[in-house]
Image (cartoon, rainbow, N blue to C red; front, side, top):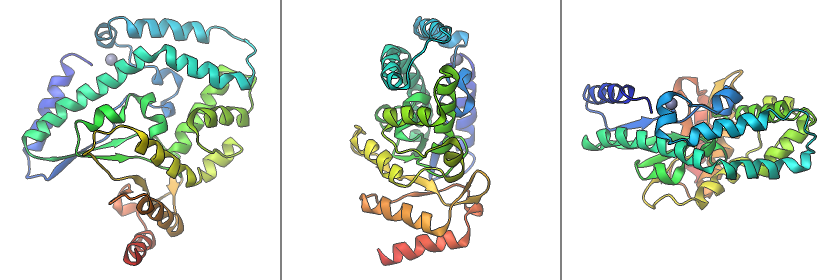
Length: 291
Ligand SMILES: [Zn+2]
């Protein structure tokens, strides 16, 4: 929302689009900071322009959250936490909408510049369970793009990876309520997301999530209104890039099988093709040859 900054970036973007005869453009990181950035950053942005543009909504959010965080030692049992958090999200709905509207307005400006040049427009989005936390609303954003790559990384200990983002959220829950165990904090997240999480932080970090969770995220996405025409190419890991992520041919093949079984016509192998071992690419090729 920074006044002045937006216009300059958009100019640079348009200049870049005119450098070559591109077929399309793929937007990434159009969002607010994620849980992996820590509690303080998730609650941004509170710059003067955001405070002004939100018409007081962000100012009052800041007050509400400060009051909530300043009640130390309130002995809340773990069973009560999902309900309290759902109430909290409901009570800050206006702020969440301000954030999703800010993100989609920004994307709209860039998409318009790309559309003028007849480019195919794609966007990288957080998994459906976490998207609204970073200001991404699938329904709103799908109006501006031709295709979406939902990032459904079940095995990635890096930003946007479900293991890292959920681990960061679980740690934040434990910062807010010192009475709960690691497993308790994961249980709270299971209630809120409908995902199936491991027993401990160590297991989440080392093994990630099972691929049943990949299907659960796709189910959520399929239940959202996406305005019909937008194509979906689910994104999953295919790289060997330790310690952030290492998947073997069996996992890559399993991702492909699940994606095609749900009726998708394409998928996005992530990330850098130079980091994808030939055996993983062969697993994809073998699977497609037999499909
Ligand atoms: Zn701001």
